[in-house]
Length: 444
Image 1 (cartoon, rainbow, N blue to C red):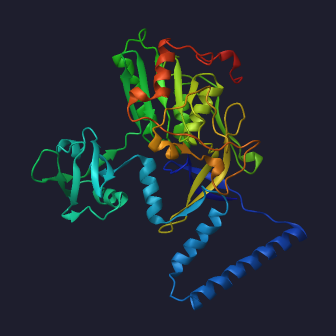
Image 2 (image 1 turned 30 degrees about the vertical axis):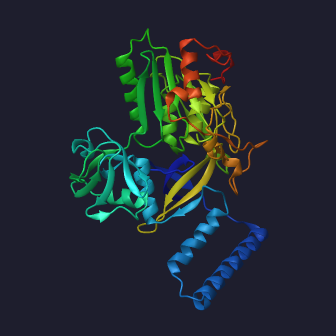
Image 3 (image 1 turned 90 degrees about the horizontal axis):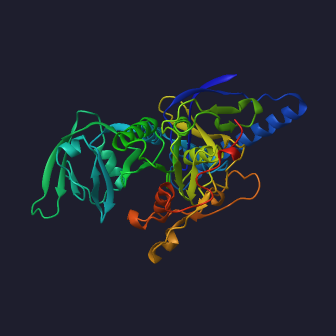
């Protein structure tokens, strides 16, 4: 047996950072048929070598050998499914930063507007907030280099860096005649994957945007903050918003589910061989004290989000509300390929909800479907095609489902799904699916 250090992840755009040991068995071939198969494999490898040498020798321009091999590897993996791929060293590092949820930087959430970097919001208690960077500031220069012409990713990379190093920002601010210059010292920034608030003094709202290493602690803090602001007898329940959450780390999806469950299976993963099946169970202790929970999902809720929604739905711990989720029911393992060689992202298992259902190319069907009112100019872009529409996706067990609404109104007062959840928790709206009936839950 060959032992490799690998990383387990889930997500429509997935990453990983928690190291575990995964056993990868070697393929053992026995007998005449095995010899024939091996001979055919070597023949195909010789064919690849012949093509590679011909391209190197005769292509119209001298190709880059490393690029040729990298492209060939990616072609091989892309032929498996949409989520398997090769990550070069830079992409591997970026993925680790994303899933670790912390990096050296300034602490500002940004977007691109008219070729300039616009500040969405500074993160509390970070260099940007302390220096007075404001929402809607436009960043014109980074260390005297014009931002115009850079992509958003390139600008973000320039703002990130080693803790203790400095960078100068030139900012255009509304109602200020001259550009503002600020010099910031980079610090350790923690990505906020969890946001929360008390809605109308009686409902706790928790939104999870991704599943990174900070998510479980962020959820615990959110619940603690809500309980500190609202008396237990006054709190009607919680809304857990997983809409447009593309996924992330498997262990974080399990821990988030566990936060709402007292016992029972959360998820199982099943690889090619029966002995690779793993089951993950909840431990005693519901952080919400059994308060009612409504989970919001839509067409952009994928993978790790679907694990949480599926676990709480199957155990009748929560009512799932919104539109059918994305339908990514597979697990990817990140296998580092050695120093300077990047990593392999390989689909190694399917996952199943506690009732034994695979959501691959189907999605989680909400207990209560709520469609949003979509503006005319957004109607062509309001739906996701879902896993089933991806070329080369793993096939579903049974009928596949494609496409689901993924639009969330920017103004909460127009958010039908969110407001329906509030009305159900407060009892001003009734539905037979809420509260769920524990008697019909998956047996523990």
